[in-house]
Image (cartoon, rainbow, N blue to C red; front, side, top):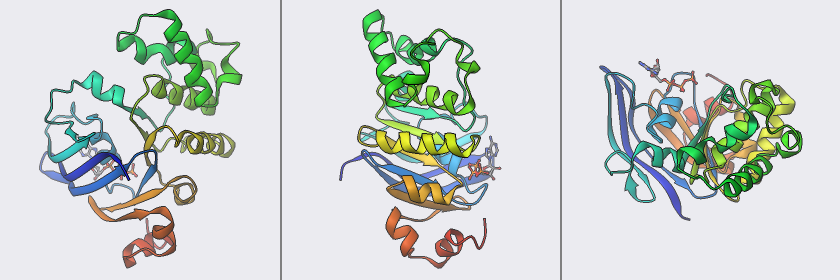
Length: 251
Ligand SMILES: Nc1ncnc2c1ncn2[C@@H]1O[C@H](COP(=O)(O)OP(=O)(O)OP(=O)(O)O)[C@@H](O)[C@H]1O
């Protein structure tokens, strides 16, 4: 199976505090990997390393390698705009910009220098369809994206991430701020999109991880304890500590 991304012995320190102690993990193409583990174990820190979102934090030190299509994202001349075009991100709180749906979804394309109006229009429509929010927005493309419901805003944000045709989309607890119906809609959307994209998702919701992911990685105290296919992890985890976590004995 082709791996789109690969972390090799990734360590990260905030000042003197080492939050990641050497994470090695492969991300197979067109699969969804769920990162799970107790609060503070380093899931978001690790996720943010994958598109260099941690770079601006003072006193941060990162070592190891993160390969995207076999090139180290920390040691190549790949600039951040190109990296984030290839590795998009969706956050916990929906974060549409305070302008129209159309301009939100077109944003990344314009930053990437796309000027052709027809191309932008086609891509906006295609991305809104992929994110299953076209029906609700097609007659309101000029409406401020922040006026939509939380679940709709999150799907607009997914459309915005997809518009630049990324290789990988990082999702940091994308449904935890949403009601159960919106969460289920986002899950369904992600399941449909897996044929085209590679997803890496942090989630606290173990049932969600079991429903939507193909691979699970369990982190604790900055270590990768265990990873494997979702079925194997949930049915027969190799380590007792993983089993205890999955059975709700802590975390
Ligand atoms: N900007 C920062 N500066 C210093 N320490 C940080 C920073 N961000 C995170 N940490 C620390 O790094 C560790 C890992 O945090 P991180 O947010 O990655 O965990 P998490 O598993 O995503 O947690 P949660 O599930 O609660 O969101 C924690 O001990 C946290 O306090």
